[in-house]
Amino acid sequence: MEQKSTSNVDPVHQLIAEIRSLEIKKRQLQLKLKLLQDGCNHDFLETAFIRKCKKCNWTESLYY
Ligand SMILES: [Zn+2]
Image (tube, rainbow, N blue to C red; front, side, top):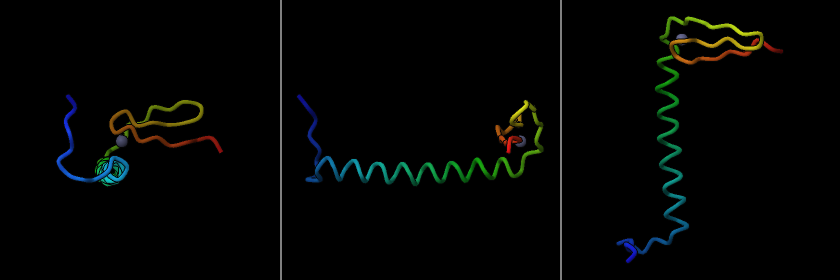
């Protein structure tokens, strides 16, 4: 038997709310990653088109 939601929130709005909270979470994680990358003493691994830090995964395009 399926577990019924306790609230009356319809699935559409439930999904929208869930997506919104995941987007907030994503932004928080991206910010956290950015802070780590900003503080990283980069150790780049260069290829013809990009350079990528081995430590924090920061990538920079060298191709213009
Ligand atoms: Zn780095």
